[in-house]
Image (cartoon, rainbow, N blue to C red; front, side, top):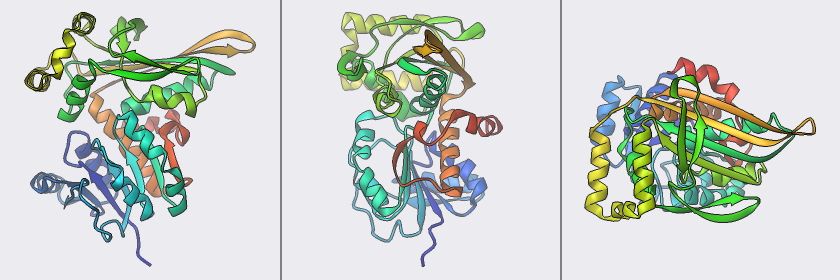
Length: 351
């Protein structure tokens, strides 16, 4: 019988993927592969990590070699996808799957494959990272303190001094003028990005900031995983001036110019090269409902540094847990299998 003991990190030499490789490579030396279309970058990472991680040439947009996944226990996906064929190949080979991405539509597509995952004994964990990810777990923590949860408001503050991967910057810029679907009072409604501002309190150090609607996928999955009638996620930056500027561009309609390729590329380049402010991030979850028969509000908060590294730490924790323990087969979001208190020590030790 073939032993499935390999771990493939797709996009493993990227900003988030390389951190996951480093952490898992130390735990499973020689069994972890940094995979992607740029074999040279994968080789460079392997050399930097003293061979604990091996390089692999892999194009997930091409048909999968039937033998590729034979010995692979787990795939950690750090790239955005448009086609679910590779995920299906993982399931059909009984290979576990973790998705570290933020595309709500793609995650919903993978959700529809849960029967296939169950049939072949594969476990898939979606919504892994900071947002979605830790936002989901904070929402779960807040909701569990109420007898009935009527609404959850999530707010994310990102530091402009942080170093984000190019893919993450591109996604954020592309969403600034987006419209997207959310659940309000158990009904689907369409809202616009960077509208409907609300004040969020991030504590003594960061204070109160106005945040705006943003299409993080947590607000699309939590209504059915937690059974909450209304969920909204908002975003702001550590600079209130920059947040207000973006909101003003959206209100005036000028944000549409970001759809022009050269303007969009120049904006991404600017965020990539110029860093001001701090590298701090903060996440709050405010749940409203009833406890002990009275209307109640519960707030949970998390602070940290380096959003990309935190995303990677969450991904590495879930990967390690899936590799060393038995979880039910099927497709799950992170809050359906994990709680934030379980990973607290891991996140602090690997900071």
